Length: 164
Image (tube, helix red, strand yellow):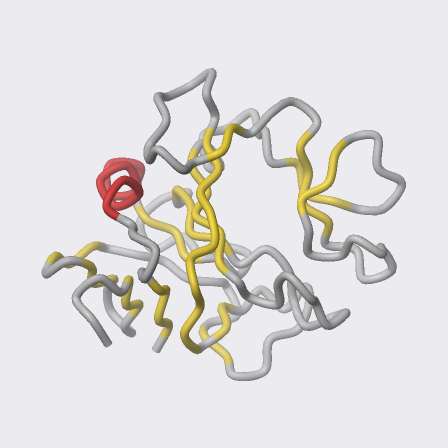
């Protein structure tokens, strides 16, 4: 592991010699991720993008892309676009990225089961704002808003999310 990796340990997240409180999925950390299990997949995942809400905050990194009205993330295993960003209207089940709450104001995207997904292996493993310390996610990694806004602009091409 490198200093530039986001390392999720059993107790915290480490990045650039700093420690952050973090939360993981309600199903814990797993080696056998499946769609809907609420678990966070163990392993080394590349960071492949950042999405942000331009109506709520300034661009957190020069390569971050805006979340627009109608942006969704497909989590329906019957969808040909499973585990990809899609737009409304969309006839398959998908998660709304432009949420009323601030949880997805910044989304750090990983390459979990992407871009060539295996149906049912799990979708949308993001790093995003948590609901609160100790409150689990649906499988993503959550951190506080302040920590997320500190981390996002410091991510580089080689940064990985390493979940132990």
